[in-house]
Length: 116
Image (tube, rainbow, N blue to C red; front, side, top):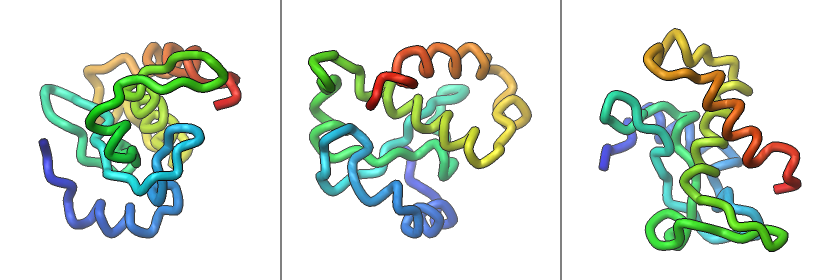
């Protein structure tokens, strides 16, 4: 487990998105989860840290929404890529070894337009 840098903690504490678990219909107090692994290490960027409650972070690997089963870790990767895109971050420049277009397409197919 990698410690979140002080710089990122300051950014995340001000971010309203980080105040509750990002899993739909869960309003529990979150723990902050490093959603992405790159070159064998957790990515310590503000956009790659996602709020998940203790249950979804440590115990429950899946959640159900409208009777459909979703993987919690996939959902957190989806959110981290989406947050980077929304902030205009060039993922290819910073993390060139990964095919971000392919990942974006895959995770969007799982979660975008699913009313989650």
